[in-house]
Image (cartoon, rainbow over all chains, first blue to last red; front, side, top):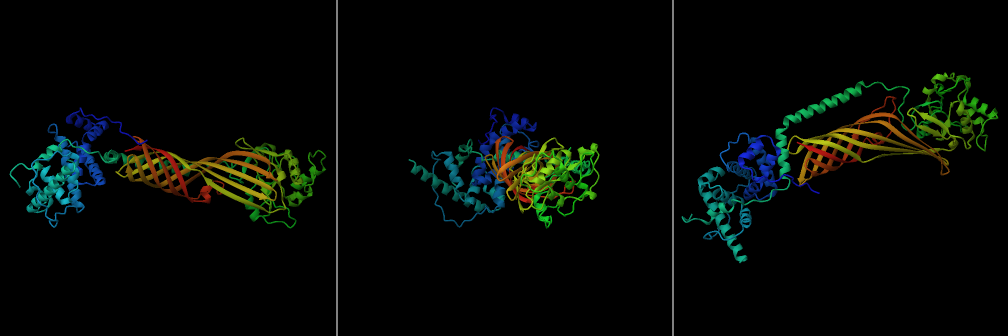
Amino acid sequence: MLKRSSVSRQESLSEAELLRLVRSGDSSGMRALYERYVGYLTAVCSRYVPDRAVVKDILQEVFVKVFGKIEDFEFRGEGSLKAWMHRIVVNDSLKFLRDNGRMKYVDDLPDVEDEPMEGLPDVPVAVVAEMIKALPDGYRTVFNLFVFEKKSHREIAELLGIKEDSSASQFFRARAMLAKNIKRYVKENE
Amino acid sequence: MSSKKDWTEGLPELFEGYTESEPAGLWRAVRAGVGAGRRRVAAWWYGGALLAAAAVVALVILFRPAADPSVVNVGAGELVAQEGIGADIVSPAEEVALEAPARQDGSPSFRPSGEPDPSSAMVPDTREPQSVSGEAKTAEQTPEAPNSVSGGEKASEPRQATVPLQSRQPREPRERRERQPIRIMAGVSGGLMAQNVSQSGQQAAHVASMMGSAPAIQTKSITGGTTTFDPSIINRNKPGTTECNHRQSARFAAGIKVNFLPHWGVENGIVGTTLNSSWETISGNSVKNVEQEMHYLGIPLYLHFNALDWNGLSLYLAAGPMYEFTNETSEIYSTRLNGKLLSSATDNHLQKDHRWSVNAAAGLQLEFMENNAIYIQPGLSYHFRRRNVAGLDIQNYYTARPASFNLTIGYRLLLF
């Protein structure tokens, strides 16, 4: 009864070909671009904002921006389009967190004992993703920026308006909490 | 931080191909947003086109040709131009029952004011002017009268209620017979009496006064339908009551909706509604029913706000004006005496009406295919009053209940 998508995934198309389709006004090209990257961008956005409804709003804005500004995008090889969309998602997610007062970097939480862990155990990616989402807002944001966006603590501090020491402290706590949760998961599923 | 490779450094590679399912309704929201951004100019064009269409409609209404005076707008009880026979069609019985003063002798008056209208004395043939009393007398004295008194009223009774002979106007020339309106006047009791019938109807008038079984008087409407009047239902001396009932059917619609902002859109289309009205006049042991049916077509112009959207199912609010019009009315007359159907007639005739209304609704829409949706939409509407060309208000659901609830079911083409 409910509407089902009738657009087939055009995974064989390169990013350059996709760009050409979208820029020519082909609606199937827009749909193909959307289908190719929506899953990845949803995962990226969800790491910053666990709320599903908010993820939808952010991604809507992202895709509207992408399709609106795609004429101005400078293609720099395969993968550049994906990277461009990734940056837009991260920036919009941070903007949402900032505008909604979710960027609280407090150190009044109980100290978390560092859990040394050599290497990442064999844990499903989806489980790790859920553990990251479960981190407090401040921990999660700094952790994502440091680990996935590969920003330094100085850059994170400038980006979030916090001290560099706070950024390091937030990351340390996030890592410890995550390690503890991973170990517990491994122990429970042995 | 440890100088050794931290376990977190492996996370980006781990998450490289990781994806999650998209939120429900995301593509539709993206499409709406993209369409809004790209078609903002088109929205202005659509708005201009709609304004132009509204201006054309307004010009047509303002400068439409005047109605043919020989063609009168008819609701139940309004005047109808008929061919051939100058029988009068009743005004709404309840109006007469409420307004017409009763004579002391119990005989009915022909008009609500109690004063007969000399202009209503229409005799379609070229014979000498005759009052009803004169006709009755003639009928009485004429051995060829097909029906004699069978226990009914005396032939002299109509004489008491007739227009004096000297006040009657001369007969109309034969060549104008076809354009004479026909009226059936209501008496105080709410019954019916035929007045000023043609030669062929004189016998019927006589019979009408006899209160016995009588042949029906047949008249033709301008559209060619036939109306049968059975005068035997007259029951002058008993009070009558009239019950009126107006109904509105569900609306059925088809339209196009254009989104100009992520949550906002404009809808235009066509809406069909049927209005049914019934009048039941009970006078003693006689019951007269009139069923009226009017079909309206409406052109709405609604502003939409999409409140919720989930997987093709959406909840929205809509508001705006609608212009409705109709061209024809269908009426069914029936009379019963002691529970037995005596006569019935159907009359379809011109009935021009147009109305503006303002509407507000909340609806549920299901997009079953891309850009195609069906919906159900309960709402409120207010219909503004107007008068028809004859200066008489049309009586139907819109006039009886200007502010009312309605239910619209329809199909919608989604554009963006």
